[in-house]
Length: 80
Image 1 (tube, rainbow, N blue to C red):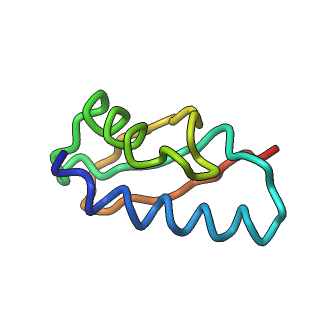
Image 2: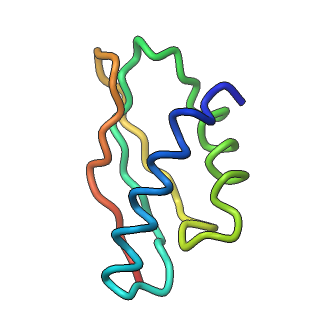
């Protein structure tokens, strides 16, 4: 779970924004992840699933696009 330090700030930021919007749940998160971070799609999704428990993001689907780079961008997220 070396992705924890990458995922926690994403969850926190989206959670805060979703709460301000009075959302009941986040259903989809679209991310762009730099290939140079060494992140594996399946491992990242599994860690996200574990870390998002008991948040508005629990059960949210992840759409990940990889690009040459060293950062993660939150492209968008859908709420209910």
